[in-house]
Image: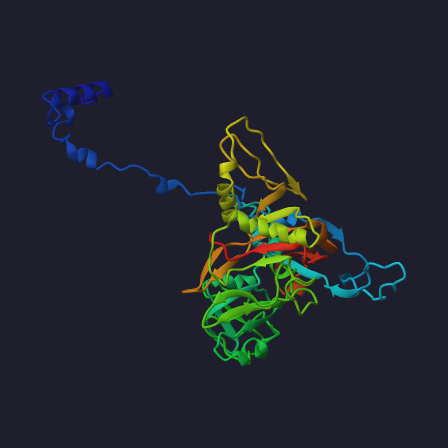
Length: 472
């Protein structure tokens, strides 16, 4: 055609029309078309949202802390043929004394033997996947074998639950209550309790006659019209199966009498009438462990050193650490492991920073069970041991609470342990069961479960120490 124009000629004409730097009309066959700002404003472009649909890789990254430090550090042993053991708690009065040349012999007396026992505890972790979800998940954009991914995640959750149970706190402070429930503050304190736990509370009242005596031995319910356990962290309510004799109220202290799950380290390193908070009077806890209902201080049934500060926060100090270690040694133990939270680990590093010497650095790592301490680095002072005792920070370490003014979480506790007398006794190692019986489930689902039967056993309670009421 006569009016045909090549691309090069078109561009040349356009360039000539804009020779003065201004937009104008194009001469020639494109005459009449305005080649100015509107020309560009009317153009549209395909964008990401027009054609692109996000797909995701099959790899699932776990955004949760799955460290299980204490569980790794404590030795595991076979359960054995019995559920209990014996402790000698008394040498016998006057059975040993000097004997003069013709004097009488010491009076024969007997030792006192205490029977301690604990039955095995079961921890179970379940999961399920629908048949349709398993099929669709294998398509593009899915995570592949959904059952296998969830199985792997649940296996980590199972060990994590055991580690958390080992380090659960033993009590919580109430801000309100009812005949069947306590509302704890901070709400995270409700996580110290599990379904089936038996608990009691110290009644905050000026009438001492009602304190503790009327409220013992209530079982935390699995489900309740008021609240379901495990607790909702948004509410912090703990409900029991049978109503308390006394209604819960502000500054009451709810505490453990026995565990449905694994006994915690906090339960073991405890003594009767520990002053944990302040309200209208000095509120206490009488936490029990195993079959021990009386845990008088400085006896076989209590921790070597249990240092509370009546609910008031204080900073970790070298003197507190030394007193805890001394308490273990005073009772004939030898500390072999120190467990604390990450906050106290940083505090202890800061306390010992002055011991740093500016010389060649060496990485130093100490093992405890299957766990290893953090190594020293050339970046600065890094603590692996204190007085030769391995120090392991565990993020699950329990906290204490300050209610001197308003109830608030303090920092984590510090435990000094003689691990020669501490073990996880295993009756059934962790086992996996899977079920695809659709008729039994009455649904097209696949189900799986991990379970372990074990218990934390402290063959001697008086060779472990605890430092509580520490600032974060």
